[in-house]
Each structure stands twice: as C-alpha cells, then as structure tokens.
Image 1 (spheres, one colour):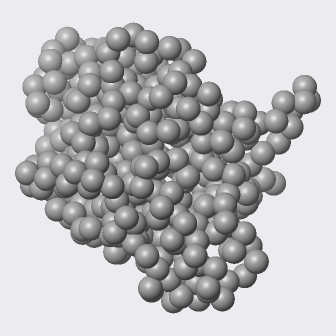
Image 2 (tube, one colour):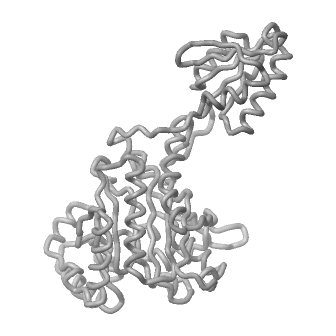
Image 3 (cartoon, one colour):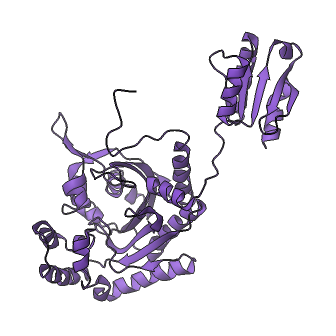
Amino acid sequence: MSTFRAPKGTYDLIPPDSAKYLAVREAIAAPLRNSGYGYIETPGFENVELFARGVGESTDIVTKEMYAFETKGGDRLALRPEGTASVLRAALEANLHKAGNLPVKLWYSGSYYRYERPQKGRYRHFSQVGAEAIGAEDPALDAELIILADQAYRSLGLRNFRILLNSLGDKECRPVYRAALQDFLRGLDLDEETLRRAEINPLRVLDDKREDVQKQLGGAPLLRDYLCDGCKAYHEEVRDLITAAGVSFEDDPKLVRGLDYYTRTTFEFVHDGLGSQSAVGGGGRYDGLSEMIGGPALPSVGWALGVDRTVLALEAEGVELELPASTSVFAVPLGEEARRILFGVVTELRRAGVAADFSYGAKGLKGAMKNANRSGARFTVVAGERDLAEGVVQLKDMESGEQTAVAVDALVSELRSRLG
C-alpha cells in the first residue's frame, strides 16, 4: 500500500474504466468539431478576479467553493471552477473577436475544481467538455448548441435525459423582475445569509437546494411573466428552432443555473437516474460577460457537459459503450532471435495502424499466453526457433482457438486483412 492516497473528493482514472471517459469526451466533441468549433485550452488557474467578476461574487462557487491561493510572488490565483470565463478571457486576449468572423466558435475539455462536500456525482475535481459561441446574438446559435448536446448524448446511447429550458430576460426586463422577487423574498422566513444574498442577487435564492427554502418559494413571481417583448420573441424563436429539429424539451420557469453571467436563454440537461445530482450539463446565453471582465460588448452563448456525470448516467441506463480494443495482436517470442524478429513485427503493425503489444520480461510460454489472454487481443503471434527456421510464425485466433502457420513476411498484411 502506498503512503499517499488521492485527495478527498477526487478520483483517479484507471484502465479499463478510463476508456469510457475518453469515449464520452470524444462523443461530446465530435458534433462540435463537425459544426465549426475549434479547440481551445486554457491554464488550470487564473486570476481570482476573473471568476469574482465573471461568475459572480455572491455565488457559492466564489464565496465557498473556489480554491484560491497566493503565489510566492504575491499574485492572487484560483484553480478554475468553470470554463466559460477562462475561454472568453483567452479569446479576448488573443483578439479572436477582431478576426472578422463572428461568432468565434470554440470547444474545450479539461479538469475543474470546487471545494464541495463530496458525494456520488459531485467531486472536488471533475471533468467537463464545453463549447462557446462568442460575439453573436442569434437564437439559432442558442438552438444549435442545445441540438449539438442532444446529438452527443444520443450518440452515446443515452435516452433518459431531459432538457429544461428557460429565459432569464435581459438588462431591460430583468431589473423589474429582480425588484419584484426581492419584495417577495423579504417577506419569507429566511436566514441572514440567504437574505443578504437576496439583496445582492435574488435569482440565486431560487437556485437554493435546501428543502425548507424551496417550500417557501412556491408563490415566488416567475420571470417569464416579466419578460419584455424582445426577450419573449427571442425565446420563442429558440423554442421553435429546437422543436423543428425534433429535440424535446421542457419549459422550466424556475430554472436559474448557478452562475451570475447568464442572460436570456438558459438550459440544463438532467438525468433522473442520478439522484440528487441529476444535472449532467447545462449552459445559456451570457451577453454581458465580456464587458464584466473588461472586454467589448460580445453577446455569447455556451454550455458545459460533465464527463463524470455522463458516465454515471450511462451506467444508470445500463448502456455499454462499444470501445475499440486496446490490443488487437499480442506477440509471444520464444528465444532471443524470436524476440528480435517479433519486436520488429510489432513495430511494423503499430505503424500500420494495428493495436499491438509484446510479451516483455522473458516469460515462458505459459506465462506469456496468460498475458495474451488478459490483453483481450483477438490474435496472438507465437514464434520459436523451429518456426523461424522455416520462415513462419504461429497465428492463433483467440476466439476460435484455431492456429495456423503464416509466413513472417506476409504476417502484417494477413493480420490487417483478418482485422478488417
């Protein structure tokens, strides 16, 4: 047993389970790459103020969950708790919005960090794939991103997820609603911290998961009743485009999401097989975030989907992913000459795109064949001195048990043919 263990609330990705995580990331990214989104990667830590301004100083993420620290040089940094602010910062810093082709469409994949109470589906280190469309105010962009997420989930075989949809209004109509909601909240029996939050950002209270708070929110005013004509028309077009694409969704007038920067369209993907941590992803429009962090006005929309929770959702539905074999061919040499020749064959197979492995450590035939079985290889190549003297190797089909002699110089082409 090692002296050290993974920190509380974190996990290690270890084969063979790690292959599922890679497959989920690939499935989520595939429709994005096919829709004009380019890959972006940002540092794992940023200036604390980026998240304080962008995510919101009243959010739990900033006040309770962010890993913040001071460097030896006196800089105040934080491990990134979410991806949007970092991606927008990077796009502004690189002047991508000045290239003349808006929206700037970006996707990313990485680890994020929040100090939360660990439980199944909620970790202090977690993985997400995200997408952002920066610099255009268009209902079609909002619809596009929702449709692409739906496509990604369905390509994985997920069926029992729901899309929740709402509009949070804009700078014209939200202040009126904000005042009405604050008046309502002041009349409730709430603790001091929640009342303080209600004065800073009352919409955050609607997102409070505590049962005693939710019971009191039954008669809260709904934002949809306060939307201006522009926001109503925008939201209806988003709904129409999603419906026309054959994507089902549910209107949820209480959907807020946990970040301050959202405006107008907001959405969440939930899976009822995950218990309390039912959200597998979500996002929305954030038209004012660029200005919050010192950039020009750049209306934008995006989402982030949780890789960890998507894997849990697949398990809840009993979906088994079709994963490519990590090893298709396993080479077992018997003797030094066979080691030299088969090592060359394995190298050639790999260069030809065939997943191949080798029996390392000078094991005997019995031990090497056990390794071949454990590898999951479809074929095993065995060669000894007598075989090589005749210019052949023994090719064993691990499914049927059939074994045939194949000429060494024809082995690579024979294997490629059999593997398709």
